Image (cartoon, rainbow, N blue to C red; front, side):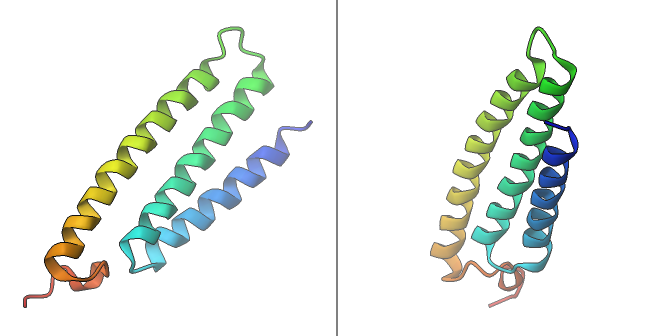
Length: 100
């Protein structure tokens, strides 16, 4: 399989994730966009690991670390969002800085 296919898919995933972070006002959807961008990076790591034929599989090992980092990020992010919702009764990030 050519290297171009996973790279184009990763670029599309990263673009969709970037749009989700920049255009959305909902904090949960912003976290989802960050996860899409991390998955695009994971796809690139695995694709280049397979392309170069690394004997130590460094790309796959880095992908496992990135997945662990993403799990921690989601746990912490959801805790922050729940705290935000309990305090302000909204998850709209535009309403966070507004004085009440």
